[in-house]
Image 1 (cartoon, rainbow, N blue to C red):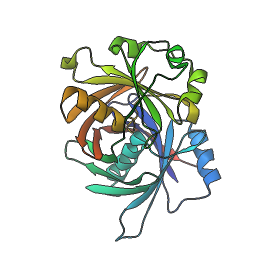
Image 2: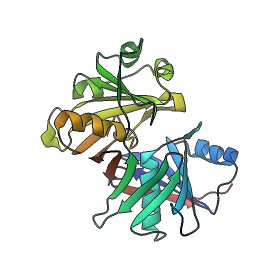
Image 3: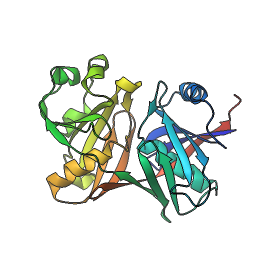
Amino acid sequence: MRIRIIDAFTDQPFSGNPAGVLLLDSFPEDAWLQKVAAEVNLSETAFAHPLPAGGEADWALRWFTPTTEVDMCGHATLATAHVLHTTGTASGAVRFATRSGVLGATATADGTITMDFPTSTLTPVPVPDGLEKALGAEVVAVHDTAAHIGDLLVELRDEATVRSLAPDFAALVDLSSRGVIATAAAQDPDRGYDFVSRGFFPAVGIDEDPVTGSAHTALAPYWSARFGRDELTGFQGGARTGLVHTRLRGERTLLTGHAVTVIEGELHA
């Protein structure tokens, strides 16, 4: 079967967030899916198969880190939609049945793909004990997204602080059910983005995720409320970086980005 590695939220190879993608006829046993994801050893590998016509979704979609299945993943959804469109398997809008409900992805003529995700609910919480020490930075504010993606959204002082983080990943494991999103306003919005972020997810086997689409379902409402605008652009990453364009639509958040295929091969397993 064909396996592909797609760099998501970028139009340049070796940037953005890489995801493995396999299109299947049906889902094999979970243990096999997990072994493949461990072998691919990227932050997520997506597995999808077509559904019968006439239902609420066109494809079933699941995502696995090297160690576990996750409830929501933006970049691997973007990567899957990219594969479907570039191979001619699908055109226009595609609906995915996932553990987070039906998620839409629509390809446009300019090469971007826009995904329709549920907006995360943000609950202000006190700074957890050990968070500042684990991040190595002073925290401005903390919001919990437990009802949706299971992350802590942590605002830091400025962009330079976010970019220079070198967290104690072991210390972050017990601070949230999924991960910690560190963010700050852009130092210079004229550079083409409004806010920056980095995502740390050691609890699910990923120390740092380069560009986390699902995190932007929380980042979008957070920064849109701050800036008074429904359309923003986020810059995420440390060693690898990418851009996520966000549009807040009440209970839904639209996430737009590019993707590029970097590897295509045959899986013998």
